[in-house]
Image (cartoon, rainbow, N blue to C red):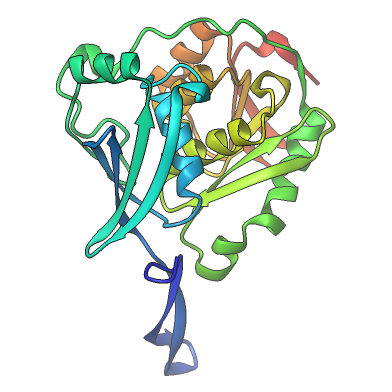
Length: 267
């Protein structure tokens, strides 16, 4: 987007052993992105201003606003003076349900439940995954190595998370980046839906910790395996176990820890 680039070059001062110097650095942008459904604002998230149609689809699915991309009739991205507005037109039946449980979310990069106004909304009872194929560890380990060369925004800024799709043939075929780990995952899930990729046929790799909401988003999308470079939370582990999700953490080099449904991992 012309008004909102994904990164900007700014003047900086650097202090190193050799002394102080002035120069420039490439800094990741974060922009308020308002998601509106049928003209009614629902959520405002701070996000990287890229792949916003994917973001809208993924967020709508993983938050349970729609059950299928077919219930999304249109997406329009409009730049505003102080942010970006994404207008999403959904089926009238789903909009009625949304209004019944409408909440005022204010998203932040480190919090997936900001603005939730009841305990029942905070931790949902998730369905058990209907398809849970076994997953081999070798492609997962190799997939994290593949990710590094595809994280173009991180290479420029050092500030973004990534979520990647590891397809059944062991290749990282899709990757999405964002300053927020939840946003990156929503963008990836939206991209999978846009490209009509069966979410039950591969794994998701993330460059972050595995929080409850990361597990929730995968389960809602029908993704059977989640591997994270950092730690999970105890709630994420319990939720993954109950939902049938294979959950791995601390995947670094040849090392990894299996936290849930280890019987599905082919070592």
